Length: 518
Image 1 (cartoon, rainbow, N blue to C red):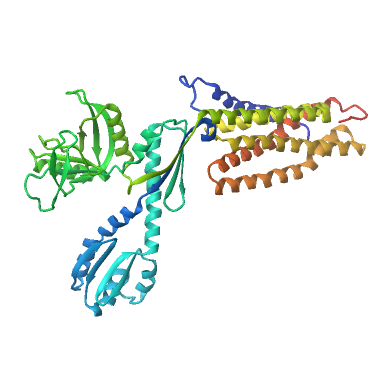
Image 2 (image 1 turned 180 degrees about the horizontal axis):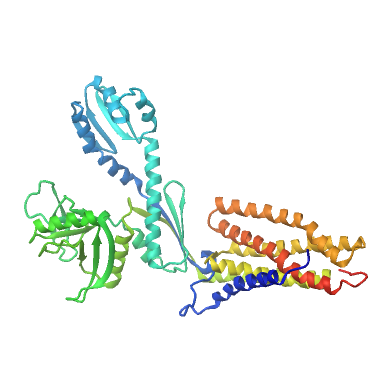
């Protein structure tokens, strides 16, 4: 029906005003934001940095396999399987056992249920390890499935750590996605100098606390240079606590020396271990090691049982801030390296914005002229609806802090075409109804009702395509899908609520005329 209740009219225009009002937040002063809502420009519009990272899983495979050395020895001893020449080398563990013990060994390693003797054969194919036997020489190594599983796990974990580090810096709307088996794509709009980002992402940030060893240590020692004194110090290989026990880290100034330091807080397990270690070793020096580099080696003056402490060193405030950020974000599972780096200049981005604006203005202007010439007053209503459609579209993008890319601008321009198409279908249907000598009110009402199925079908099929693009697409494709999808929803609202109400005003104003020409 063309008639609208006062409540319905009020709700239609209230929704339009509220959503459109959000668009005004894009014109706020950057230094004096009232509401932190705006449309962010993507890398292709704003300029910024493009980094392609690769996860170094070769080292991780070796580390993970090395971690299985002790459990494997314990398993062999516990099951009375004698072994000799136990060697770990080239991502493979080898040792000698008696030939008739090999099947028993496989069953012990791969079987989950001792009552089902043959189940290990299926598990053997899917387990992360594989074995082979050559005249009593057994080899244990990662299977293809195990390596694939390890790669996927390392990349996913690395993405989360990279995301936490970048978010802590305050970069707005970065793009961080997996590319291939071992690569991560990072796009940073607005970052013109990515050197600090690269230095943060390039650090594994594996933190551990170990004691300085004055004498021979049963666990062995590492000779590490001190950042403070440049002297070589013997550091025990025994780890007291690791960065896994750390739950908070913040930069601050030392109250005594006024030098930058990093304060940290440990979880319950770490607090207990740290308290016991410092209680029993008052007077000894504690080495704080990050990525196999000795940051500092303070002397323990008293037991530290509060679960908190400080890391001091030759820091300026920026390096202390970066160290705290690295510790908070957690350690990468393995090293990552930058394999490709590109910078998009702001001039190129501005050219894209200008081209997008020009195409939108030209397209919009031609549509407005065509609609007024073709449909007169109704064409003017269609143009008002079109402007309202764009304001609502940009308002919704502002509400969700969406990132606008060049393909996103293309999606907006396509929305203009879809909106006009909807109004053309409706108006042509109304013209057909007017030719059948129906009343003006009935013709307008029937025209809207009978055009509804065609308008909705056309827009819903396009919306489904946009949803598919959003789910399976990446980067610019998603930007196009978002603006197109939101544009379709605002188009339907404006065509069947806003424009229909304005059209009803025209229809009721001319209801007593014998005929009405569109």
